[in-house]
View: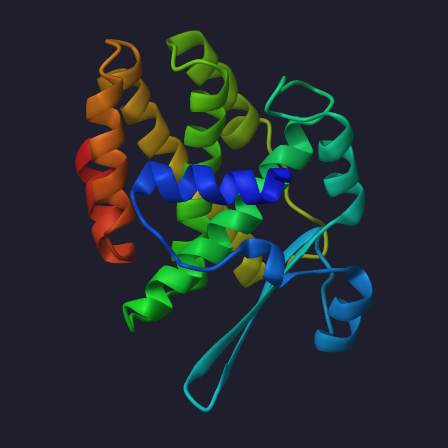
Length: 212
């Protein structure tokens, strides 16, 4: 099983959900994306189209990132050789699963909601993959939310959306760390994460505001 499929299985297991689809069937390469999409070409991109009430999805992940993950399997070690590419994969898989879940519930979803959940998913996935301990959490939070950058070709609205997702996810991760990771209350943290996942954007932001 490749890394992308394992990330799907891990996230669905974490949140106790079952999309009923295999992500490998939806991953496209650069040539296919070029035929489907104009405009920006980021290293990770979820393409969404509604056609006569049917949701059509395709997920692009940078081929070089996938090749690097195949060479340096994060299941064996997650370090500087593969962390960036692993985060890219988690983000794409998170977007894919969340979009399907919202479609299955006939619930609209905003780009900010997708990005916020993906940021939380990246933090939690790395934490659980390495060790659910405070020093690890602190290092991951810094890597994800402090030492991060934004692509130069983002427009103003996109940059604001990414900043809002980053800032809110950072506050939530800090609260998780203080409330659950430091005192080693990991089962309770998983229950909290599952409840958070099932909120819409307004509910997620309310949880973060109350926690922070």
